[in-house]
Length: 299
Image (cartoon, rainbow, N blue to C red):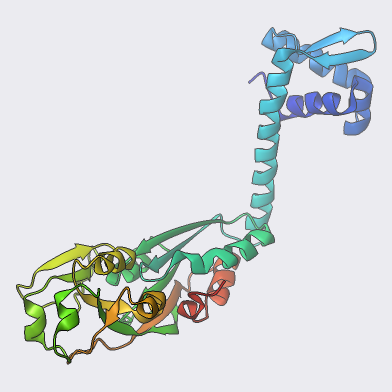
């Protein structure tokens, strides 16, 4: 390669100091070394990078383009060097966090701001799964840390703790036929109406279904955000996480109804593999060990 990081550093230093002698002082080199390096680079590229007018030196259009692009490369390599040093100190190059689609992503914003302030070089990758799909992502090593809702499998080799509990409310829109039905609602009352269900995203583990009657009309959605919107629109009924719909219940956009078969509260779990645990994983496991759903609605 004709270009090198050293050559870009020299051109950058000349531009910053305004002269080759200034660049030599800046880089702790002798002036003849700087002059030779520039001449050699121009010869190899067959491009004039500087206009020389006595002691004055200025970049040509080609030199300006090279410097602008080159500074991006210098920054990228500097960032890479910093990340490598951090990784050598125990920080992972990337950390994958998978959370159940029931958990609103906004609860992680302050955590990300705090983590970015560490400048440790670890890249964070967030993704969502639903129900058994979250545990499956951990077991198949598609995630390093998970936040799961529901039953906790009896697995070894993982660090697991309960961090929260989800309470559910049976809801419909005010215009839904069930809103005027006699309460508590029985299974027979629900059978003729459409239920909105969230699909379990598990691929290999047994998929889980909740509150679904055999042969019942249904609309299946991938996450709770869509489920809430569909129920607000009166497209069906179902159980919704109470902490996610507090505002809708207060303003009457959703109505909570009593049913004979209520959905019991479900635990929220935080888990990660104990093997190959790095500094970033330890940091995130500690900071996520709190009731995340309790932060919904807080500014």
